Length: 192
Image (tube, rainbow, N blue to C red):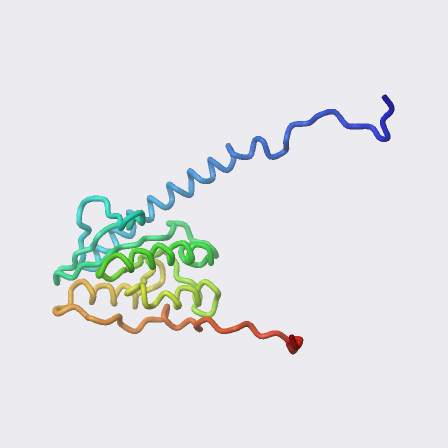
């Protein structure tokens, strides 16, 4: 049989061995996430709250805990972050905010309890992640970061210790993102 071109010998799929590399990365990410959840719990205790024991799910949507403040206020906790510092840490990534936001919306539909989010790093309010987070203002009662957010810690302390507790969310920088606006193009749209 005549061939038009030479076929190289079979080689292993270059992507065949990647799962072990990615599995190690994923294991590190899971461990960092678990470490951050411990940091978030400590943050809540320092702010005047305690986590009620037990796993918490709303239908198929897990939460990271149920917080009870010294003033008797109760909140659902969502914790997303990392002990590491970096430009994509915490809620600085669009996909992380979207995933956390979906969970917050689904939980908010299933409970009357307000949702508190603890993260390691807040996004810049003008960034896409910041705008997505601001759009979640009706589903999330408040957000604080464990890094560089003294005002957020003070708000959390008020939510958990002030008597009576604030019934409405307190003003905060994370709520200042520009809400969804249509994207503008340089050209006029073509007539239909």
